[in-house]
Length: 115
Image (cartoon, rainbow, N blue to C red):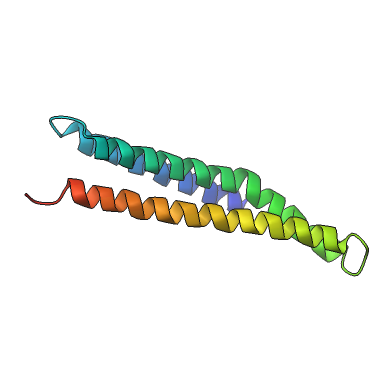
């Protein structure tokens, strides 16, 4: 239940970030390429977070539970490999979201810098 609440919160924050970016963009005379790239990054970040929370997190939780059940048995190595693969994917996705966030923030700063 807590994971679902966290996912809803992250989705709401992504929608809020997109909405505020679109509102700021609407105040400009013309939509610039940088704003479009920034909004695309925020949308991709939101999508990755939702995917991670809806797909990767439940699978990793199941794999972690299977680790405790198969400890010392022949299936232990397979369960560990599955968990490790899911963990690597999760780390990769989180790192991607972080880098995309830094890029989006940089684009926002460049666009709104005083002239």
